[in-house]
Length: 466
Image 1 (cartoon, rainbow, N blue to C red):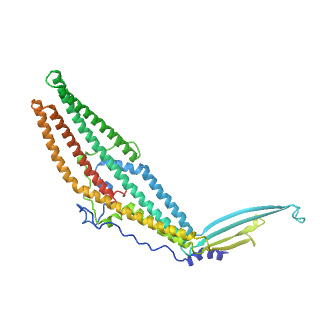
Image 2: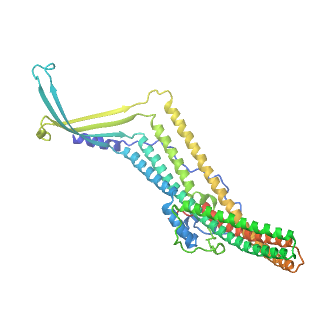
Image 3: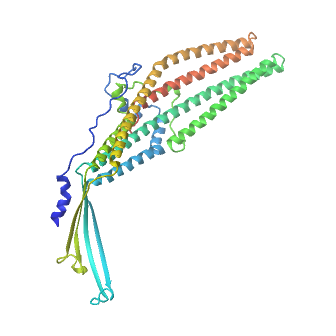
């Protein structure tokens, strides 16, 4: 009996055959060898932005705290982690096909013979006790089981990379939403300062009108300016509330009251000197592109599994055990039983179903090649766009700072001339509106510069290291 089981367990290993998976070669990246805009830094280093830990990239301790909470509580990231666990379990299931399936069976059979069946053994009771151990094993001569295992493994790797992509996106979303909230809060502070100034002017015009020293036109102009400033403050308060709600959703819990103090927008010091490198070398390290490549390799392995269905499938089934009419004699005496049942299934004619399935697998591989190439092209555009914006932001910021200075001086002069009775209040109104717009635009450009750095960091694959 031992020899038969050794034969069942070892025969597949001795006759392990070939695999019919096509040889895999990574598709060439369908992108330029250089970025459209020369990178400001980084081409001289061997490191990559994906090697920069997010704790080193961000310096705001309040933002770091929010990111840590999001990585712990965000539901999208939790779902991605569970998907990894699920595909890992599916891989273990598929890998189990490489080994014999062994199961045990114990049973008691009790029979009673009636008089109509046998006159000799009329009313005779017959009891049999049996214990069996069976094994089933598919000889993977043509690599079907190994190809399926390879496919499951690649899908597991793909979900791992997908989890990293979700984490990168989450960190970028938390940082962007937090920085927008800081911008909105600072914009609201500017609006409130403007509201105080225009309210003071409105009160002054009102007193002047009541004293007969100002026209009703100046009064109504000041009143309209005052109400507009109130609307601006309310709008920014609404945007701040919505931004806080977005942060709450991202971090997966209410905003704590004990968060550390954050930094103003102008003091946000992100790691701007990111290594950019060569496009084809940088982008293939992005988790979303690695996930697409693993999916492509899974489709490639599926072709091998389908090809194997064109050839015979051999399954070995064996069983051994003991049987006895008495429970006390079950493991003694001449009670050994065994069976050995090899089975071979040969495809003869199935109306072209196997050929059609092979065509489906080959087409699916071509689809995954296109998906992989599209992912690289999309990533290339993301980085190129971020680099293009970065090359212009400093110039815009400098010009806007000079514009703000000019508008501030214009407003001061116009307001002084109005108080001296030289200019009308309409000139003050126009100067104040232009000053407010210049203040808000400078704040917007400062935010754009910081958000551009966050976008570039994400586009280069940074942020997946926990």
